[in-house]
Amino acid sequence: MKLFKCQSCRQILYFENDVCVKCGHKLGYVPEAATLSALEPEGELWRSLASPSVLYRFCANAQHAACNWLVESTSAENFCLSCRHNRMIPDLSIADNLANWQKIEIAKHRMFYSLLRFKLPAPTKAESPDTGLAFDFLAELPDPNAPKVMTGHDNGLITLALAEADDACREQNRVAMHEPYRTLIGHFRHEIGHYYWDRLVRDGGQLDACRAVFGDDRQDYGQALQNHYANGAPPDWQEHFVSQYATSHPWEDFAETWAHYLHIVDTLEIARAFGLSTQPRLAKGDELDASVDFDPYRAREIGQLIDSWLPLSLALNSLNRAMGQPDLYPFVLSQPAIDKLAFIHQLVHGGLAPAVVTPAMAAAAEAPPVAPVAPVT
Image (cartoon, rainbow, N blue to C red; front, side, top):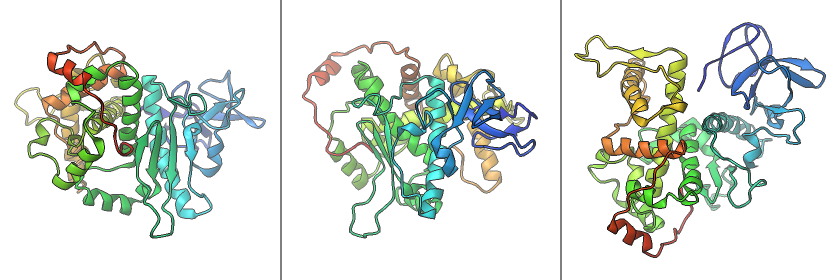
């Protein structure tokens, strides 16, 4: 995430701000320019100080304090590049629903910031019914016998349980699932990983290359999850995976690794914006020295990201512990996990070379596929 400042008074701003607290200017995010801009009224429209040649209006969800993104005045769209992907939102006449949905939109907009920075394709279902992306944000029904809302991905539709925006509920789920980390933005980054497995791996002709790194995805998905929940992760999971859940199935390994890649890149970008660096005095050598002097969204190779991330995450974890908070990044990256991150890096940047197909891989590729029994979660 970039660091933003008001074009009128130079006040530092958060991505979600809609008013500058110093000069009072209305603020709006211009996705085409990837900037948060101070605005001047122009009748019923707004002129951006960052791009004054274009007139804008706010996304229709601004009326619910759920979005601060702008839409060009000449566009036929009422919703911004992020909100137009929403298919279902909760009943906003219920106060808790509105508050929880606003939290969800903050996380979703941050994810869309990354998708736009990477220039990843994200058509709506209206633009592409077969390969488009959509979101359902669903509240539980009051009937105790009604089916539970399950967060997951199914053919471009990402469903998120509204209850995940409730801090107490999400923490309860985190403890019950034995997870060290569970956040709204983590959900989005994980589920969008499933979407891009479909788009970039399956539809992009990279199945063999992906299977060479993550394993054969054609094993029964429903049975794999049942086995995972019944038996847990193998004892040596940290030697090969980014998380315990990643061990359940190659699809989940890919989605978890994708999420971690977005975690790393976006955190490094804000570290760069603040000029953060590490050079601990007690370290004997320079192995814990780090300076993010490059654009993480345009990094040449995964090593450039990891060399900065490992020392920085150690420093951030130490700062959190000083405040009595859990580790910001409670994970250990083994070399196999870094190799998987490298695959994601190459895939995102369109530089993935064809995999070397061994005879065993070729035989696996010819095996009949086993259809999953449930939507990917």
